[in-house]
Image (cartoon, rainbow, N blue to C red; front, side, top):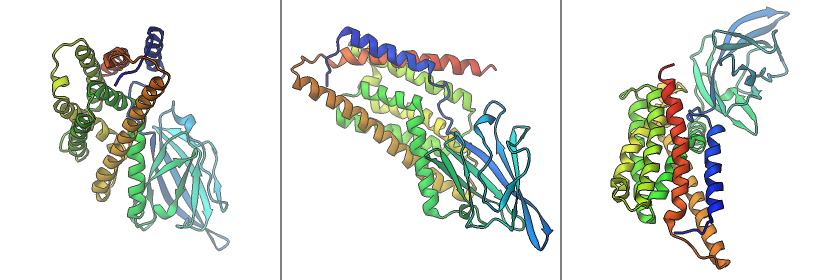
Length: 352
């Protein structure tokens, strides 16, 4: 598989990859999910109407508080001052009261610049319930039917964890760059499938072990090691293209197992941050992982389709193709530069 690229195109592509460093965060495992608590606090009788009071506490730092705006509550409810909420001890608090208790027919919208919100609802005289609500077209709709004393339906949970897994892999830049590195090393479609499968099985194991607290490691060293794994993979691509012997080149699926075990810890740190209820752990593990794999397969399909399309266009125009290593080497250097930047930045965070 070869693509004709002139030297200026090589350097342009490399420059583009390097500039990603300045626009991509060093830690790529923030799911964009905010945790919050909705608590029913008291009932006040007034003119034979029950005025229910509710408190919405949102976990956020002072630097991120600007992303959290006041909830758009039902019309029969009134938001208390301060309308922008009060920030204290890492929580932004909104208080509102309603004529009568909130029911499963009620909902409120959150115009937050986040991917979703994981809410724990504390009802008077009823058990606490929890659910995850994801953003759709810039708005997070919290349907209280999913926060009744009985948790949301299984179908709803499956959809949410699938969506979460797909979003996580497609926004996890370090995982995506690692997959690109694997594609650069493996030329055979059959071997690529074998290698990706090995990577999948391995990260599924550590995802489960870490999420179940059987294997516990700090997040920062894991993130640093993941970045370093991309550096190693980029180096291996360059060695292979130089004709040097490489274990990764000869047995890419074996190397993928080792790297996969490491990357699974990164997936688990993100999923654990949601505080999934114990009863939902098997469901969360299964469908989050399936979502990750669907996103991963989608990404690989897009990359291979682009390469194949480029080949067809160049052949159609009669352009002479050049060896694979001539275009994979500059990409490998680009991956290495980005990953080295992440490794240094994440390593420094270990001492702060």
